[in-house]
Length: 630
Image (cartoon, rainbow, N blue to C red):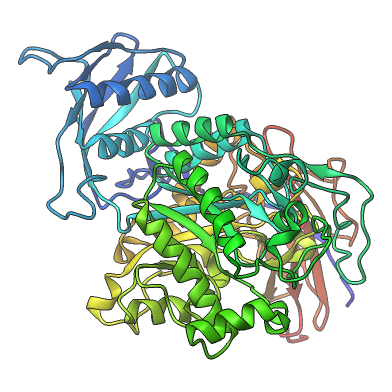
């Protein structure tokens, strides 16, 4: 491919921006009727005038629950604006003004959403936020998103009336810490962002072949041995395997687990632990080899992938699992316990005299039915403790446990089958929900990543399959995005993969399908990049708006009018095939590219965010094949 380029500068066109009312969008010279709130509320109407929030504003709390939310709100106001409000646990009087009221009162007759619905009314004299404790909390996030991202002595909020409730009761994010761990402080930071965007379920993947990450007091070797591997896979050298030669490991103490669970609960997030069984168990078998069908010894896995050695269906295994799960359930007060159940090779069971005897005794036809029997037995124990079992869609194989909830990841087929059988479902297909895939083409990403899942595709997802009947659709309880960390060895890599796609998933989970529209979301998203930056997140710097991956020129010149979604960013470009850096020409005005018939022109752009981070280089090929030589 040959590239012939000439750059000419012309005048810039109008762009979307955030107006003087924080969190409100408008075009230059045009008043907007939309708030820059994510996820988009169910109903919103702008009024006349604005409310001025300052240190003189009083914060009324109707009861103890509202008082707890008031404390969290004050913490965020201090972080964002630099001041706190005086709090009074009572209702305002008739003559009161310049106040913010948190009032505890259910806002929906729909049982599924009433605990999370809220009503927010803003007029020039007062702000009133009404809802259950959870609903109030979510209304607070809407209010906080309407504030400026930087400190301000007075924040003006547009008069507005908002009534809002979620589409789904499970709005989840998953994080795998089995392959690579993160600190408790990182998890708290992650939970803060989940809460800010009204996500309410943190799926904590705590055990894997490559590491056991939760302290179990009855079995100390799970972390002493199972928590450490001698090395990890070097980059992507899975096959043939090359290790990095660096020992890796760690775990969370039970006190740290309690700390995370309490922090999440204060933000109305339920933490769902995942303890993998019967597969993905090599770290546990390295610590307690007697639980396998073969004698071992085993080592904590260093490579990624699926391993043949799994828990044997022995009485010793079930005794072990019941003791482990008893400790786990005591740490996590939520109703769900995730048991994995995915990617379970059956080779060891097929050759095991013990496993075959269990199959004969229980009248099981094959090893798939043995896995189903294994999970049913675990479920019976979990149910006896007042908890519910949830697993990946492989738990359908051989027959589904009676009360199990299915998390559908291998497409939607598993979720559809489970819903038709009357089981609850969480949709989490790799096609739209696996955030360990890159956000753009591999060569245009900041890290060496596999796959591609752009934010537009995440946003387009509808978790309710059209093939389900109305009564079956009710079993789809929610949606979840997953982050697997085989190749994400640094916290900033996890942040890069999560943001801003988490915001798109939040809107998929909260906003009714008919209320979604990507162009509007993209405009609102621009107001959130400063917030992600203020939170210290290494979010993916987005591709400049107006830079197509490929476009067919219609004439001998083609104009590129670019806009950096992150306000305050600088863009540098090249048109000669070299890779741009900060010494390259800075984009100021639209580029007019000369294109020769039959030849392609290449424009490459580097964006530098206000905090100095560099984007991956983004490319645009302008094709001259369709130009007619005159």
